[in-house]
Length: 119
Length: 110
Image (tube, one colour):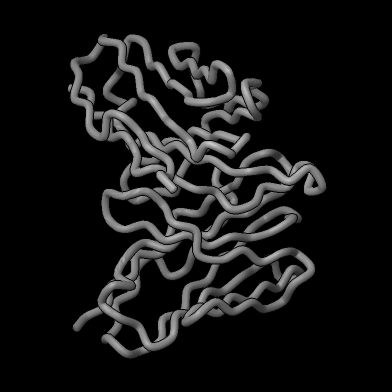
């Protein structure tokens, strides 16, 4: 069991640069989530995939943010033209949705996060 | 937006004592979950309680849910130094996502 892995763990960039984060979920999980977390706060939902389909995207996600999950496996989160306000921990989580649960969200398995610092 | 609110924001107790954290939420839910986060790390799932359940146990953890008051509590008995972490409640309201509180920072003093 390799768990959820995220890369890179830390990224320092200058304002205006583009950054990309990668998430490898637990292999049999069909749901994948991206969250953002700032110091002293709980995770904020960014977006959600079921297999390769992006089903939900937060209004917090400006058009500078884009996420993909090609072939329903790993996912990438790209932030274009970074701003200092983008500095945060970006968390990826995965879960296995049981069909009978419908919209219910079960236990999420989180990666260790990718910490972004924008100078 | 954050639905859950944990109380207290911070809690410091002696090793061996019990720690109680509370969570309040605003809308109806399918389930409520508690997670732990060590500093700078990812979150780890502790326990899930469904809306039709009132109490659940897992090892030293006891969770209660009162849907009429829209509140939950997490009790950690016989605390250990390794329990030092932030604890978050998250509610599932059938919207594909969990809604999180700001967490309770728990410090266990040796």
